[in-house]
Length: 136
Ligand code: CO
Image (cartoon, rainbow, N blue to C red; front, top):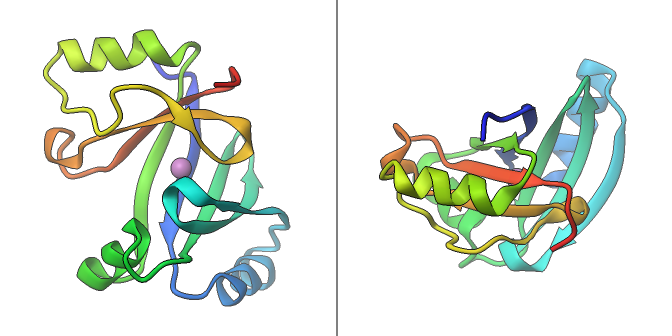
């Protein structure tokens, strides 16, 4: 299941508009998409940096996972997402090595990706997302 590349890095922010402005003015990147992901109770903004994207996440719900993350740890890197060729077998392989899955089955993420999260307690503290381009 070796990942082909880092698909994106997810960054939790309190204010999406302010963060977008910073990424555009400080780095000269262009936000090409803003999307609400109901499943994650978050609004997301995307920037391309080579083959990798930056995914800014602002919570749309004070009880949502992004709000809780910021409450506990402040703004910052929330997750890293690896692109894999085929998500279901990659998930099973991770599971078979003892990694705890947050998502037993792929679910729908932003940008039409199938995604699944691995528990940070079993990945040295990094919330890890696996994703592929097949439509779930
Ligand atoms: Co993500």
